[in-house]
Length: 172
Image 1 (cartoon, rainbow, N blue to C red):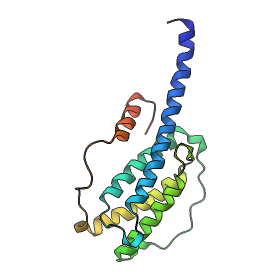
Image 2 (image 1 turned 90 degrees about the vertical axis):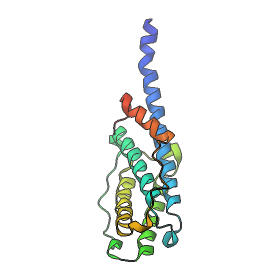
Image 3 (image 1 turned 180 degrees about the vertical axis):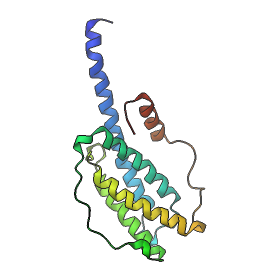
Image 4 (image 1 turned 135 degrees about the vertical axis):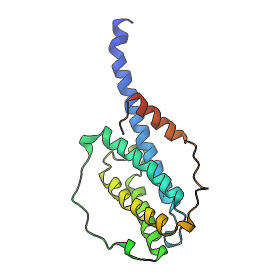
């Protein structure tokens, strides 16, 4: 290698790393939209939340990758005002409606594709609440859940994230 090649190598690595970080942000934005689509319909949404849980897991992994790659850009606000706990209700449409509302809020927070804010403290907080509601629905009404909708195959995005983690460019 010539001296000029060794001097440009770190710049190329930084560029590739920045490009991959932007792709993770764009994928998170797309997953936010997909999660909202899975729970579309509010109180009339499909009570089978198997796919929504899988998308929420994938979204959480992407948001955690963004948070770890941009720790100085995180702005944690005060804890939100306590909302009434819908999980005390035995009414499935009410709980699904609350989960759908959280999914639409996540969609708004993650909108913008690569222009999405790297501050993911609020989306992670809302996602934590949403996952609690989805787990409650899955555990309370197991007869409505089927595993047929979720494939065990890795998606293209899953493979890319696994490669980045294996190469050390992204820490989860």
